[in-house]
Image (cartoon, rainbow, N blue to C red; front, side, top):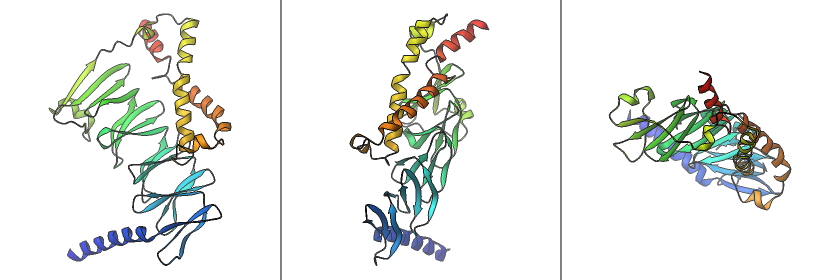
Length: 288
């Protein structure tokens, strides 16, 4: 047993030492990696090389990203347009509708099937797939399935969820940070959590009983700002998580119209949380 522990400790120490001894070098405006003896581990053929934890690198070729290990092997194919490092040792990679979360070894913590993945309080991740939200932990365990129309956290220990047009609030009363149990179906029976069915006054905009042209126009216009923000975020990520590049370089400008149109279309046709979702729920309730 002791021998096994020594072996594991040696491997971990060796990996840390290898990464510490490796250096990123530049040649003809491209980047590669050398070891302590200046032996080339990875040829200088990458537009960018970004350290990922202690066991790997995010690498970029042209406009695509992937992951490389300490030996110069590509462990996640260089095929993704967007790369965002998360907490230093994870990276979110994706194109459109195939975002996944990978650790520093290239292991897919979350498979590349999501429309978006975002960080939440309490070491949790907000996943978005087919217009529905869910919550996962950093081990890839789904704490809340992707069945909710909306999820957000106004406080570190409070989560609000919309399910079939109804809002619910989960509060962890025994802690300042919310940590969901593995089986979310038992939350209501757990004394550590307070579950409330919220009656939310969503304002005049949700009270239309008849969808007029003016109503329709106002709600369509209201989708412009979210679509713009999503487009800018995507174009920033396509620059390799260096947000300043989007303002310095003008290469993003030709991509803006297509990306904006795609995001605007997705927002408008969202059946659960789009600009016309309140109207749909209102009309459905009238028809029942």
